Length: 231
Image (cartoon, rainbow, N blue to C red; front, side, top):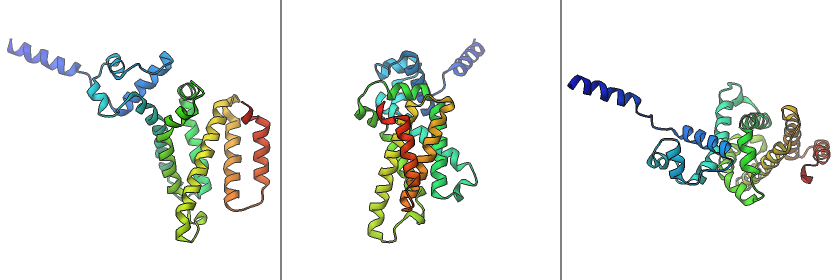
């Protein structure tokens, strides 16, 4: 009898569910949204459906809404992680780092396009969209600060903070515009988004260098042709 009890308890321990990780909870949340075309009604409903406890949920997230913010931040964190795995990346100039970031980031978005399109196009509330992207915004601004090279920094210390914030905010607006273009892009393999990225990054850095405006004009023509603002 004692041996039977040990064997039974051993089987129960083996069958015991594993504690969900942060990434696993995010994955379950994305699956739920895609399968139900809406977010879970409550933490209780979500955790019960996926067979883990509310306590386990709250060890990572405070609300359902906080998962939404975390997802886009995870996309960015994964982008930076992949970039840093390239041994040559550290030696890239700022423009090359920015291009590498964009192409890698939008590859990740494309791999999760169904979810991204659903949550960003679910309504016309721009404030809600920006709230969902708040985690992404904070991490992206930090990334921009990390890659600003001496070539683009002013020498006067008093102006450096102002310049850094200006570059952060300009880069953030550029990322949002690129995201909007990608959402509306129906070209095969989203090749028009790739063109948009190349032209926009080139134009931005020529502006920073106070270079001739040919690239800006070229970029402007491309935007007008695709009617990005007429969607």
